[in-house]
Image (cartoon, rainbow over all chains, first blue to last red; front, top):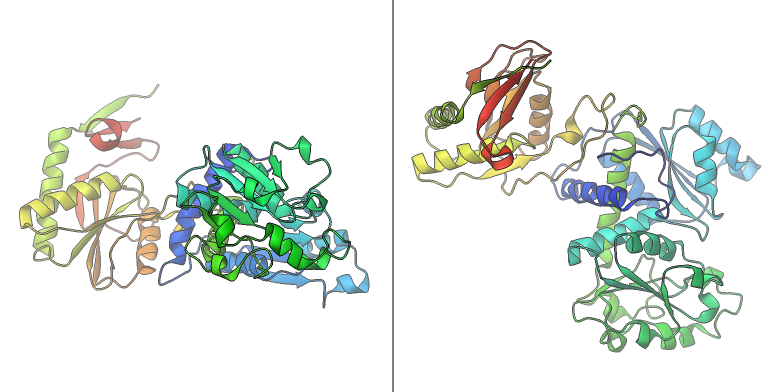
Length: 312
Length: 176
């Protein structure tokens, strides 16, 4: 089986078979990371451009490493220091870079739908690395790979995402991906940070963390996006920590082999206590490794077939 | 209309593998430093058979692994991306005598990819190639050290090896 698509824009429109293929490919990409020579020649001569309109350490570095391990050439464009600051439009930026021979764009943008726009604008492949509050498919996939490795499957698993659901593209990508694969997804957060039409999604919603955490297999702790917390969503950071922070006591409500995940960067002491973040249930650094593996898999599946998906 | 001819049966395959096992032991003066690596997916059953035969003959355990070469192929620009399953090489190849195993030697391009893949895992003392069928039409200067059967073929013919492990019987077929 191969991936019959030009772009990876989100998990909402993917089939379980496609997600399964990506996760299987990621598992085998991961063994390249453990080798003495972390380099394979498959994407030699391909060029990958990361175009980031928002800050990022791990997603961007992870994509760049994934591309380099597979011998692709990488270019990074950030808003700071580029002609975007001279007023060049998003569309012109994309067309300019495409004209330089970019085969695949990795795009992060503050506006939902930005990756879709790019996919319709350029003939090159596009991978969405986060668009506004919409989706962050590679984060969803790496979270799923981490769960798959530890639990062996998804069927019947209870996965809780806790925190700022409203602003979280990570929560949305996890919800689409996990529910397609047969897991039960729960969201928990202060009611001010739950999206207004959440009842239209197939998800169990809680505002009481102890109720939400009861019997779950996975707790995925979302980052409180302090840069967005100036609109009075909750009275104080310490109140949030008291009511929703994941600590050892709260974790006792979950299954005894619970996995604790966090997409990073962590606010230690706010959404997660340091002893939990560094504790026996945490797989947070494994998530980072799996991020490279998932991105390698996507680059391979999109570019490794010569880009001629239609003829395949 | 396609006609299918059976060119090797179970007994012929068994005898060919037994002979190759003996040749490998003879050439390498025993099995002490030997590791066997099958090229995924079709070289794997033959690699396991050879490892078992050599272990029985010499009384030493011969490590056996499987190698995925998808990331090393030279035809990715013209063919769709293949599903990749991880290589299983649970040993270090450095300073070992590696016997690379594939069922059919055709253009030699898979072998070229496998050689590069092994080199990225370490520095073997020597790499030898064992194949069940050498069907000709090589496009690269690669030859097998151990051959079960030389089978001259036309380019449009298809050589199909069946293993009990995957297809329920041991046989080599040629379809015209």
